[in-house]
Length: 311
Image (cartoon, rainbow, N blue to C red; front, side, top):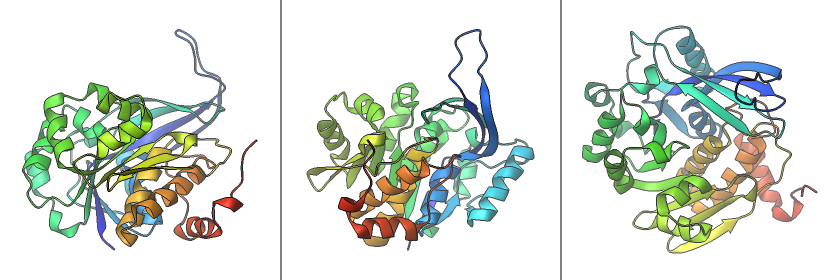
């Protein structure tokens, strides 16, 4: 199986379970708190748990948050594709999780938001079978021009998977253009797909995203996903669960899909696997809660007729 090169760096998530989002000038009622690696970490964990090797080419710094990141990498068998930033710690993301499982973010980048041409030149791309980058990497002023240019000019770049991210509307068009041109696959949620294509119909949106590339995935939470590849659009039903924390579910979907696509060459199987893995991840608190490969494959082997249906 190939290895994944993740070019979006990790952060530390500060996870607040809240009774409700606070209104302006008010304070949330907090019912739980945790701190864990998140951001670019999540998709790597999902890929690893689905059987794929993964390394981080995104920024990892030095400092207390970075040490938490490194401990997470060690526990999941994830390595570094380039040296650590000697002067910056990793940044953090405040995550507010409502009782429904919905999450809201407030983030500030640090080491994961900085990358130079020299940093990128230190990465040996021939060691990898896939490259993953999110829109966050194109949003950070300390790295967006460097990574867009690297993607544009690196002839030997492994097949690129692009995750537009919730910040897609903020991405500079001149930096986004070469990334879209180079992307082999796009995995976007419904809102991101509508923004990129101008389409409101999801079948049309995912078909537009897939045009000129191997394919595209459109994720729509509890509605499952749409797969466009080979000129065909397939809506793949969800694995229904009672979600308690949706933080990291999209990342789980992306990492799981990539790992299974690489292992089998079957995009439909990979999308079905990703639906189950992402759904199960929402039943556990935390940002990087992808389930083990064996459990997901066992559920797929049972067939969708045996899956639970929520009332």
